[in-house]
Length: 270
Ligand SMILES: C[S@@+](CC[C@H](N)C(=O)[O-])C[C@H]1O[C@@H](n2cnc3c(N)ncnc32)[C@H](O)[C@@H]1O
Image (cartoon, rainbow, N blue to C red):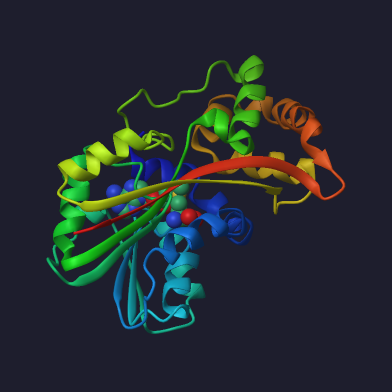
């Protein structure tokens, strides 16, 4: 499956259906990356892999003059357009690699949208060409799977039922392709970015989906390796849901399902 098939056909509807909860889960990390762009007032920002658009709207709510959200998923872009509340935001459907507006942005932002490039050095160099001299880059990306039990708990629980998940090999596009700070530094330097700053950020908060049943349902339908496994084994849906709920039990507290999440917050200058 290519990235467009994954984010549109496979999980696009689930991301739209669960847009508010997914945004709630990613918000602390997206905000930490947006903080790197302050003062943002008056700037033109490109939001790479904007998904259903919550971050694109936040960029102008923080004072950006304009924000352009771009994503491969027609379903997510349709949702973003339908729920937008300002004409300072616009959305484009497609691959950011096809963007050809050299120097027309002051900053590039992304919440979990820059780990899926086939050729990361070429893609980050292309993004750099789209910002004006001195422009900025700020994004968050996941650390490794075992630093992210909100994802790995469900993946591990699925193995007895679905077999080993089809995870991208090292170097292939996927959620953990930028998990290593040294690799991020190497890629960004090779792409011509400078002043690279990488900060690990972790949280341990109740998952906004709520109950273990709701967390399990969400992760199974939004995470591409699980959604893929289930699509190949539709008869296993109930067993998979039960197995993930059981695996989540050690994380259940009075506050909810508390699962760790760990990202890198990265910024750089063109
Ligand atoms: C993990 S989701 C994150 C979505 C959103 N930023 C959020 O935080 O809710 C990754 C998104 O990046 C998009 N994406 C991946 N590669 C892309 C590319 N080359 N150009 C545009 N969008 C891309 C996918 O379509 C997907 O919606």
